[in-house]
Amino acid sequence: MKKFISHIFVLIFVCRVTGFAQQPVVKVSPAEMDIELFTIGEVFVHVENISGFRAYSISLSYDSQKLRCLNITRGNFFSGWNTFFFTQIDSNANILTVDEAILGTGYQNGSGDLFKVQMQGLSEGEVNIDIVNSDLRDTLNNSIQVQTEGGIIHILGPTSVTDAKNVNKDVLTAHPNPFNSYTRIEFNSNKNLETELAIFSITGEKVFFSKPQLMNSKNYSFIWNGKDTNGNTLPSGIYILTAGLKDERQTFKLIMLK
Image (tube, rainbow, N blue to C red; front, side):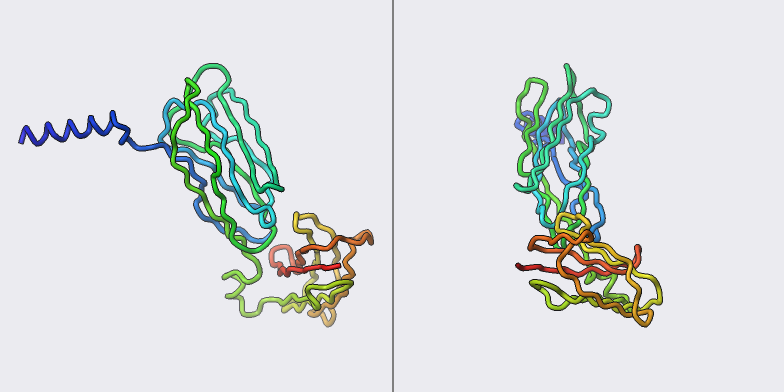
């Protein structure tokens, strides 16, 4: 029995000195989340089980056609320290980068959030948030080896599960689509209420807005000529049409080709 116990202690000691201890992890949190079209979701980059940690440079990849990065803020992991914090968003390359380092001497151990990213859904679909670079440094400026885990954001539109359960949901359509010079927008509502109609560019900019009166209190038809609210001709591309009330909106993708 004593011989068996001594073997266990030897095994534990060997595991520690040969690097079998738990490796630090940098991950996107939550690992999977749903957001609605044009709403804002928040993801965190979280570190776990790290020691002697004082600086990092981390890059995330995302699809800028479906997600717009609005803001990046410092997390709570280095909250007790005075740090250098720098962010860069390159929507053309679909990359955002965050650098942070403790100013002066010092280091931090444990787990916590490094930074938070606010993103707005621009187009329906699934977007992978991958950690494409994770350069973490200790007090001697040596690289700390870490595991990385990415995340997924589901951007939901009018065909989401919630809408599918609504038997009496409103209907928003446009014909022709894709279109060249004009398209007829039709909105059929099951409610005798005022509606709001807006058209957004793929980057989330509101280019057209109106509060039309519903025909017969339920039906609305409108011809859009591809111009913004000020009468300026818009470029070819993908636009998102929304109609309804503030808390009950329908969405429809428009494609203008010229």
